[in-house]
Image 1 (tube, rainbow, N blue to C red):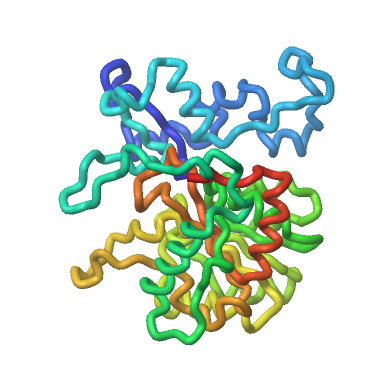
Image 2: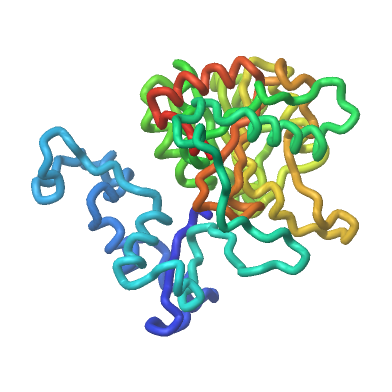
Length: 346
């Protein structure tokens, strides 16, 4: 998740998450943790930089031409925790409230997670930048059987690109976005802002979600923004990270339809698609995906990003897939050729 907090259960006092904390810290300037965070290279407040242009700190930047870009809060927090002794072998002694690592130990009736993979000699070579064909076929089959039974338009391996992790997947997609306005919401996954800002062709357009609406995505407002702001690409997570809101049913169908009714590409980060707390018991075990409402897998400009990290509880494998029209996959193959070179071969 995009919030980040890591504490050791035996060395630190319990964390008070009640209303007193909200009363105590109304701004990050009042928070000791934020002050430490801002002192780290690359983590100065962007708001402060707007008011006072930031100069290069010679104590931080000692390599000519190189500046710290800043890390996401969760990575910064994890690095600090490891410096204080955190490791996954003793993770049960810590409370990891930030990383979104879905580790709860063995789950009754769940399949065992593999501890080793057998592979042949060919797997020692580079994999294609779009991934191994067998895995691409498996992903296409997953989406067809889970969300597209009985549909004339079906995914094939040509609609799937395998990449080394979710951030790599989002970065490949961002690299092929042209000189257009690209919208994302606030709050949402913190990496979107930094990722989109790294690619100078596109113009990131943040849209603030309202607390009085429980940070729900207002699809009516999305349509208005497309008309008034000239948006060409919309990036969003669903289920929403970190608010936990879920776009489902008619609302998700309406959102997907935007790609057919306008010249807009919709990029949906669906990594938490199986993390649904259903109100009705009969829905337990069901997931959420925009793939259910896509009419033509090669004409609807909807891009889905997911992987093995959350539902399959294999974040260390760094396997993500991007699902979309065939013409998108060829573009992602090209951006992967200079960004990451491809995922693991096995």
